[in-house]
Image (cartoon, rainbow, N blue to C red; front, side, top):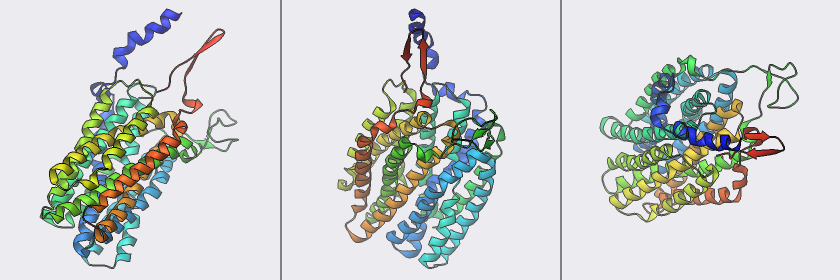
Length: 441
């Protein structure tokens, strides 16, 4: 019996080794990957397009950061509820009205900015613009969860999604900067609205791959079987899981890097008379993130995810702490590349941990909490960084990524025990008179 147990891993080691080729051969994957990529592209364009447009019309990075922050806060607050509704009623039912509202709201914000509307009017339009941002990334991750349930390729899928996200953050800022600086200051937001509409509707049309909706009934406790043995009780919010709350703090810190760099890089490139370099520098940062994500997904990790998260986040905090001291394009580009390479492992590991921490019926919501945390951290960062750039020295906005990541790292270190998988996600092999626990990674 012992020889059989020890021989299984050896027999299946090659088959279970993560691989992007094997992942992308998953039946039906491309039907949601392609439209999903188009639908999530606007997420990488929205904040920067708002910053560039509002700064152009008002002349203030503080005002531009504030409007972008309202958009980000609205998205962060509403995204988890969007995810919960998608878990309960289906992705299509939530996505179609969402993309329609977002398109109208984004175009309204564009028109108000061009008309030199007062700041309060821009804030009013920014609220529905952010609240209706389609949560396509979490929805794609949820679809992978259905396709790969119990498969060792789940870590590879998490890495692939992080790479996809970061590829959009390579293309998105470059596209937004090019449109806003060479075509028209409003071109970035108009393109973002158009891509949201077309990509979102195409993604929503892929009904065959969306997670099924299980009918819920009233019952004694959330997450248990109903009295009839068929309908399940509506699961508790993913926010009730302590590990999810810890990950939210970590993702807030990651958002502070995104937001702080967006504003500070824009201010830096304008100060040297090369505003077009903004998209290039941000693209280098995102490229580092994407390359590190590719490597993470190709490695068969043996260390526990929470340990990888702590190590990766420490590296992120250290590299982000050096940004404020960079005063040349080359140094800033090199540091940005390193920061990006440190973000990917933290993002991938955080999303991977969700599978062990959260029941299947609440995972879309959990993913949107993390996505929303990045947006909220980004919103706070663009606000603070914009004020620092306006009031202090050039480059002061880079203090925001340093502060955000150091605070998040301290929280992770103090509460790391909450990142251990819940009992419902553990697998235990039982024998006669003994039991052998299978390591959870």
